[in-house]
Length: 368
Image 1 (tube, helix red, strand yellow):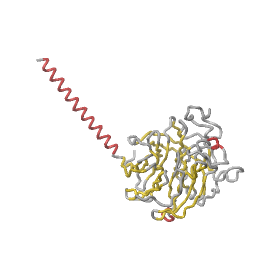
Image 2 (cartoon, one colour):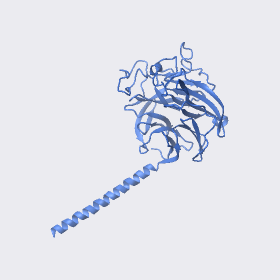
Image 3 (cartoon, one colour):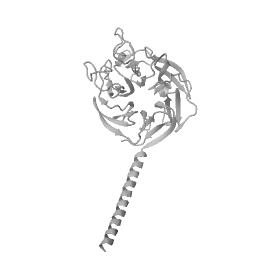
Image 4 (tube, one colour):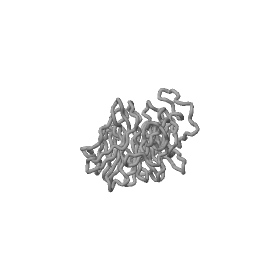
């Protein structure tokens, strides 16, 4: 009798445990489903997109590195790309990069494109303006071409931003093999430049009258800085370090941000680039990531900065307190894809472009 009771008891416990486990699994499944429902795929089938710009709630421009500017209208990609885009050098990390609407786009229909210009024998980061007329670019004008030309197909940077006075900021990468030039003022490698809308150097640039310095330079000592976010003309920037040492900085004109004299990273082959992480006259990053996350873009949203990454396949939230920035960690980490660009849409929601072939435009339906 005792043996029968014991057998029945054990069987009952097993059934109870199984039910509890199934209930827990269902609960976990619902939780994951709810988490995933926060991310909506707006469109897929994009080929190596790099940046987006919102014309309205129903129209979005998206650049593809191969040289196409796509129009997304009412949630669908138009089959025909926007015509009148420039010829680009599509190799390595080069191609068509950023797109930004002019602050007065509603009246002048002007936009800006950055891209790799040239060929394997000589290429550079270039910035142009154009007027969007229907599905075509008109009145194209080259505003800036980085100097000198380089022979590498890497580290173009290319992010554009606009100050409140209408002037334009553009990041120019160090060209990978030209990193020492980031410390010199006679070239554009590893710089942020500031120009007027006609392409001339801004009148307040810090090295405008310095002998031997290029007048467009606004800050220097950068590596491959692919994010610029302005909040009341405070310029937040992030950049790729080498193996480690990715950075977030607040940019001020005339300052030296250290690369390659100071860095928290090492070379890809494990060699030491420099013994210094600090040096007199060089700015410390507000945030640095070692190991690297490969930060790609950044958006200001509800008082915080949101940074997309490629290698870490993550979205990170950064909290701002005056001139201090702290990393609050990953959010929406169930996305788990290489993330290329991020922007706030006219509907007040965050939008993200994934990276690579058959990439997607995602919409985050709730804040985290």
